[in-house]
Image 1 (cartoon, rainbow, N blue to C red):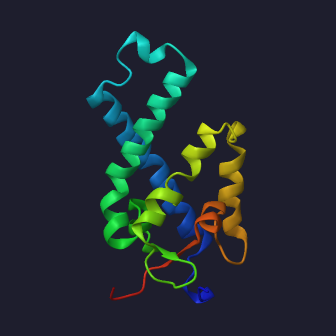
Image 2 (cartoon, rainbow, N blue to C red):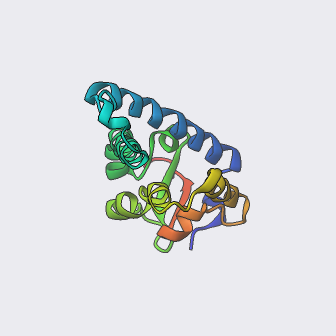
Image 3 (cartoon, helix red, strand yellow):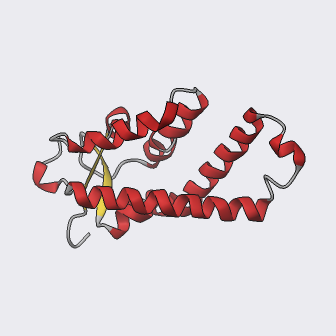
Amino acid sequence: MINSSRLPSHFRRTIATIIDLILTPLVGLLVMLVTGLFESAEAYSSLSTIGLRALTIGVLAYVAVNGWLLHTRGQTVGKALMGLVIVDNISGEKAPLWKLLLLRMWFFPLLLLLGIMPYGIIPIIDQAMILTPSRRCLHDRLCGTSVINKALGK
């Protein structure tokens, strides 16, 4: 279990999330403009086509922005800027890449694909869970991860 002295403040965790929530869509917009995924009439032919293309752009943007940091340091850009790292909740070691990319990264896209995320309720519940003593979001709990303050000198 993670020592509570290593847990970040709610403020730092929230700021890291806000940074990621701004940066990833901006890169997604760039990906959209470069790839031309929405430049044809057929791109707007159905809601499922729009959703699939938007999901593809979102995943590409997330990996483009955070992939290397997640692989090498267990951080997203926001977490790196705020001095936070994603760790395995049991061992306290940097979470393995497969857990970060296959479980954690797909939490929100999977909810969207399954139609479970109405009106943004799940993201609000997800983020509100950092107010609990363990400061673990819903996606942390489902993926077996925690976010902690990065140890000095590492």
